Image (cartoon, rainbow, N blue to C red; front, side):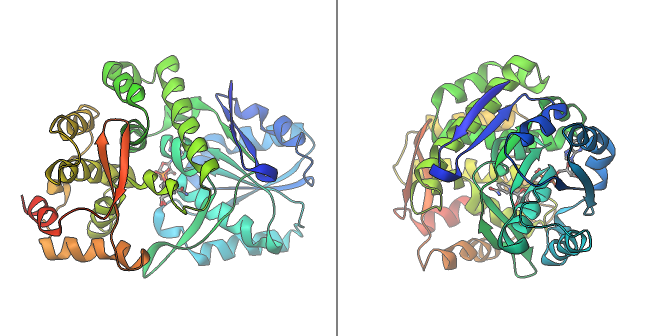
Length: 360
Ligand SMILES: NC(=O)c1ccc[n+]([C@@H]2O[C@H](COP(=O)([O-])OP(=O)(O)OC[C@H]3O[C@@H](n4cnc5c(N)ncnc54)[C@H](O)[C@@H]3O)[C@@H](O)[C@H]2O)c1
């Protein structure tokens, strides 16, 4: 097991990478919560891992209760957060009762949000079971639900008290979901760590075969980078925005596909476009978009808009991108690579060049 610390003063917490699910009760026991705990999960994950988690909690004297939310992004809503509140109220959960999020990013975001609101905040623990949740969504404290008018529009910054990752849970994850998480790992290489990027390049087969050593290494590096960035800028006042590489065009792709393109797949496409735009606007040399696109392709991830069943017009794409523009007060600042391992947040890009790229 490897421990990565997220340093946030009184709100610091450990990420336990490679801990068995059976250790959950013992690890939570150290944190002096109330005895009553709810394991928020979905039917898919509950069937696979629910019993092991409940048993681990019972063994450490927790009174654990499962709370199921249906499986799917469309259930990451206020209504389902409310269903969680109702289950907690019926069972007289109090302010010391922790919530455990057992599942992927959807369960993690929803549970964290519910924990931030229930009785003005109860402790919560992330037990991510997808690669994307392990390397990205379970770390850093962004929680939330979707609104019919926009994804992740309702939420809170609310840090977990502990993150426990059992890498064996990835063995049951469908391949496409694993690859979707790989896009976020590639992202860390591009924004922060050339060595990680080169490692992914050299060890592709081992990573894709989920060999323990290489898999543990890339998850650990991703968590270290995210922990580092979040520790320096918890609320995205500046630096944290670099984690959004590929997310502007990616967000447009997700929206226009009606969420049939997975988050990580959309980020992969977005990264390729960001690298091409960076080159065209003179921020990096031609090798950068070449290398980014090659790695994305090598990992079997989509790299162009042809992934969309219906090719949207450039205007539709630009409109979808404007959603970010509103959020940023009128100016779209994009994360653009300068080289592999370094990015800039920049408003210095030409709209015509982006339009031309999207039209190709
Ligand atoms: N909070 C953040 O910082 C952050 C960052 C990135 C993404 N997100 C959010 O994360 C969500 C996407 O997360 P995701 O990609 O994990 O999707 P997900 O939670 O929908 O999980 C994908 C699928 O895998 C299944 N699954 C989960 N673990 C499994 C396992 N071990 N074996 C078999 N099946 C398993 C799930 O039931 C689901 O069907 C989006 O809502 C996105 O907005 C949040």
